[in-house]
Length: 245
Ligand SMILES: O=C(O)[C@H](O)COP(=O)(O)O
Image 1 (cartoon, rainbow, N blue to C red):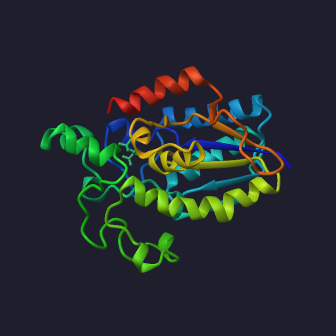
Image 2: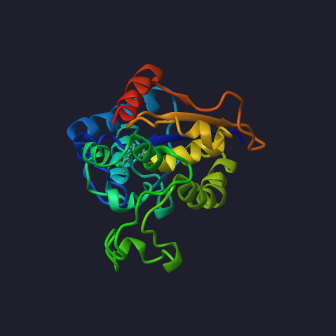
Image 3: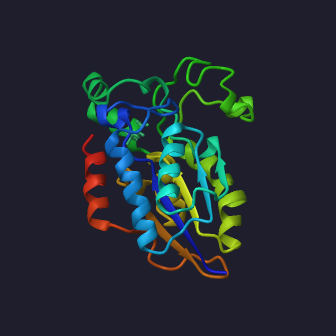
């Protein structure tokens, strides 16, 4: 069966609005972010993309965004799956600092490497601090997978098993599958789907609240052309805001 996949970065969070590195911490949506989520739902409904299933991270900004999208599409009742594998990149010791502060405290090359390179992780956070040991969301996270920091390559390595074992299964059953995740977990997934090399991914920015559509044929082959934003002009403008941070 043919199937559609919709990737969606959560709506703007308070940390996004304040220019703060967020990573595995929680930050609620701003009113603008909530409206972005509702707008994404209207775009999906207008394109006839009614989700049969939704996947989110275990961070509240994706859960809230997904709920608003499902409400707007009349699909509040579909199965919802949460996984830490879809979480934002763990931003290590940068978590909670503003991008402006970090940029001033180091040189441009280090800032860009921490934020956008494939393989360079930010400096690590103290063990057991972010998230705190015992956070019930991570009961199933094996101790060796508990991160102190992550490069984009690390994110790619933990997102791909979830893609292969769970999301791809929904697509092969012909389900319209909504994945609500984060700037960097989606960069990793888009890099996989669009077969991007690490150098190209450095220039990839994912806008908040903009649905990105992929289509698959009955043989589960991705249709040519890569992902398409449902509202390309707004997506480009929002991606430019992310790039400028
Ligand atoms: O965790 C964060 O700070 C953001 O969600 C992603 O930030 P980035 O665009 O700087 O990678």
